[in-house]
Image 1 (cartoon, helix red, strand yellow):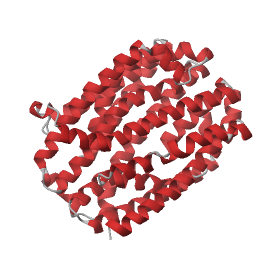
Image 2 (cartoon, helix red, strand yellow):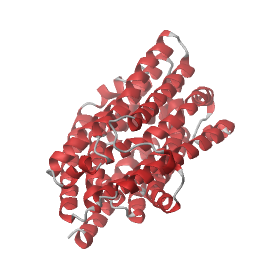
Image 3 (tube, one colour):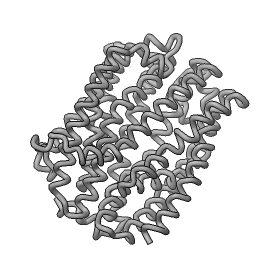
Image 4 (spheres, helix red, strand yellow):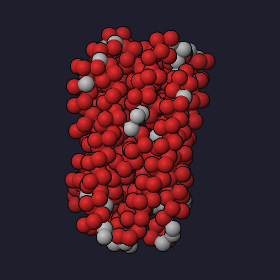
Length: 445
């Protein structure tokens, strides 16, 4: 295993970052395209209410799957540092504990969500005519969520052991299957929201089964070994302290979605929730290369931090921020130039076509500065520093965006919601820059 990952400590940082970031970016791109195509199909073949229903339901599924994502990110941080210290046996034990935690917790949440479906949907903002399609969609996709949680757990682990191409396939295969099944179930078989949910649920299964195959195959040096499934509480504590950051972040995002949906419904009705659904999809798609750089940064920084190579950690931070900022600026320019064309992809509805482009432009105004915030919070997670990682991860959504979404619409109506996004981006970037600069001066000098 050390043979596979030792390159993190020797090869040129820019080369390593490209090797890690390009597959991660492609995987995120395809996953984002999948969600965009899914929204396009649902919007054009079912209707505007269907977009609003998916906007309400998916954050619930993602919150449950974020348990796996948190366990994956927290565990992979430990695995990267363990490999940097040449502690292969610890890496195996951490991975076994990750599997037990992910499957146990995700199934527990799925069963709870099934019994309390309606109150959960209403909590997340399903109001009026949205409730019926949201319920139909939710009842189907919820059973695919444990597979999604398992995939989200395994994906960062695959990157941590130096196999970014396989991590990319984890996202590509389910995306392709979902698009094909959408056409089959929605367009050809005319199954409506049930068909949309079934396509999504099966695609989650494809992703989870691919992760299982990888760790059972000869391609992985990190294996699924049952004796390591027994919980080691010291490892559990370390995974939870770091992985809990991702879960808490997703929890805060879920709270944000609840507040957003209620605020949008209050000031703009169902059409405003549909507008946000489109903006959210564009955000996921447009920012894929920046997120890919962040994903590529984590195993390189974690390995070198574990190996006590401060110079390479500093270089990794600098190179990642430079790459990410250049890409984010290009994305910003494209969105400013072509907002109408982007919105046209999603809907034929005249009201959506009229209102969404302006909202999209406002929401993306601070895009050029976001890389500093992403890399800054990722560094503290890679280094195993749970408290600053948690605080910085929650900056945008928790400390800034939620209060702004409450306050600004009182003065600016629905536009106040869209204005909240760039203001939160700028404020969180300033705070993160201060923390990161101080950390580099004190601990990486």
